[in-house]
Image 1 (cartoon, rainbow, N blue to C red):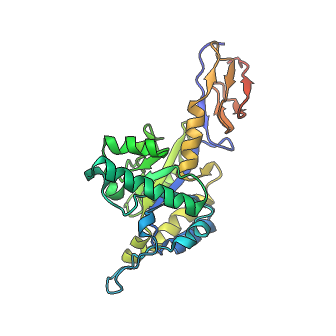
Image 2: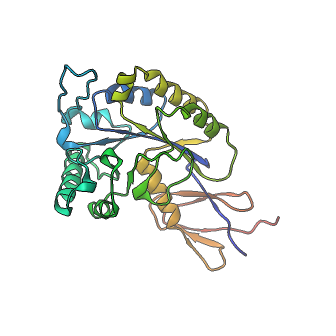
Image 3: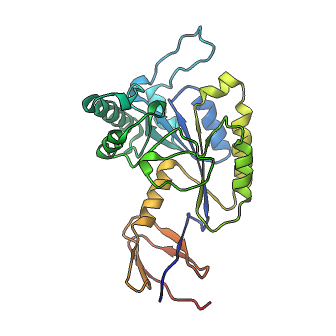
Length: 283
């Protein structure tokens, strides 16, 4: 059989994925969700359970009030809810007990509201350390987002240090979108945008996000639209694949179908819990 040089494909045989991540659970999420649903894109919304229902000072120039606990399940039903620490505390500066309290109490409260185990976390203020990453693993999180822009479309190497492509206010946003849509590559690629919905009120630029998702959606024939958690689950399933010595058999032990492209350009669907025999195709 010789060496295998398989490439990950996303569901539907696609090689690109687009995802979004928005923080704090502010009331502007209601409008943002409507835009995302209109264009069928997926987002992970990171909330602090202890701040839900909080009302900001009406004298402030921008309203940063949080959504109510009872609306969380319905509002975000087509997307994903992630954790953001109970009271949005800087967990990198706290000792182990309080850090774990912020992480676990937030996760437990949000899981009761959503009805499912949370997979994703976003570091408050983008601050974290090595211990925080270990605490998230202990709590059952599968990954965590930073605020460090890469301006690239690379897949994450460390899911607990998930760097986005850019913030929605980045001046290169639409240039990156056009590059992503038009790129022709067999390499799996991810375009990842993050922000806070209240920023659109503050900067009076709701047109920025609608222009972006409209463009991506209308040119998304080879793009998978997924939440952060869905992407990490899929990549994990790919990395769990087990190969026979000669590479002719691949066992998928996960509960997720995984798609690959072989070095010979064959697209194969590796069914969950099944062994797939891959025949060698001559050059």
